[in-house]
Length: 545
Image 1 (cartoon, one colour):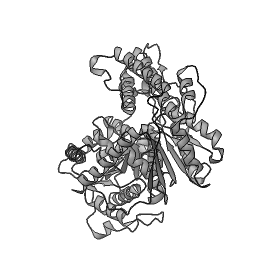
Image 2 (image 1 turned 180 degrees about the horizontal axis):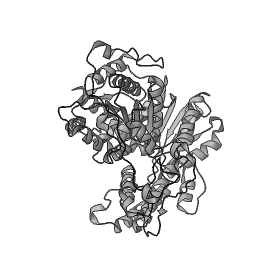
Image 3 (image 1 turned 90 degrees about the vertical axis):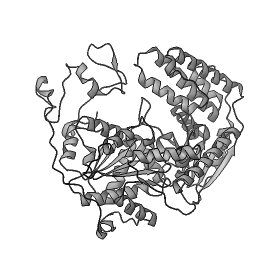
Image 4 (image 1 turned 180 degrees about the vertical axis):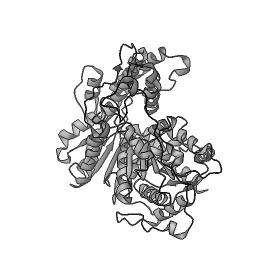
């Protein structure tokens, strides 16, 4: 941790697996300290008041935090409440679709469905500003799914509205900040869903005391396991006679469409989770964006690919040998689904469990397969510790380089890959072959090879905006929500595109005039994308009903 109470600087040492005292088990990042604290009575709990001193017995008693009184919630009812006067200090002129979204959100709970880059965050900022003006003793809250979004959305809202915004996540939460929130020192809160659910369970923060709660990327609420769903239950399960916060959802693509019947059912279920919120999807002018398909030969029958596929299957068999029948992995054809299953297994078992080594072996083989598809055998074999063959480029990499050669000297480019290993290898090669584009890499914040927001992800995004770099190689961390400079070219290797939501979000990144989305894929994968396009048309039809 780089800071302590009141900004004091102190040193902290930590690794992913921390041995505490004489305990034989290890405490991992996935463990919640507030659930484990009773197991470690010899460790003192310190607050902002006694961090630098005081006895252990004194420190273990955390004084209750009082909350400033709040008034009954007030909603927009009169003409001035719907006016744009006094909303924005940034000088932005909202488009008609944004104004309509603002008015609709003041009138009722709403799900705003607009393409990536079309200004959903500005709609949310206007609603939060007006609800705070109507309710000066109540917070306006935006809930996000990822830590980088906390800081970027918070900065955007503050710049547009001049609201006093608290950006809160596990990386910077302190008891002092919680106290300031409860005593009305902030106008708005941008927070990760997991932290808000945890803080509500501990009685630190009460989301039902807000005037409005905005869910960024609200399609995540469709998952039974996501914290968005838990937070919505808290907000709407006990709705009584007293008014509850206005609920606003933001998304570029609400649901995963399969059939008309299942799409209708999924939309009804999502709306039910949002207390029957109305879906607002405005008619937008046709995009200037072009979608280009680069069909390349599949590497599936290549001897190197078949060897790595055997390694994946053998590794999965080893994982299954160590699991009960109920937990075994049944299907491994879709590598994106397999990665999700492996992450779930990893989180459910102790770090020293034998299955962890088998999971790590499988994950390494999956990453090697993507590296093989993108760059050829040399880098992939090296990652697996195999004898490295003569280096050769893959058809996918040659297609990418042809697109980059055709770019103008000022073009901004995003290249999406599925894994961090692929991002690292691709970035390294592009730095050698396209040094004038000054490539940079952006990955998520978790794990030993992750990037933090301030010095990593934000710096890379800022470099793209300023022109310091013209090419970012990134994983899915840049798919959702993050505000990125309008790109001229977005390249996606379709092996990492597994859902309609991913497809729509990637397409929305190429939003400069005549921006292009290039999908580099095999003929089999092209058929899968045709299905996603059909799903998008189906989703549009169901929402329009």
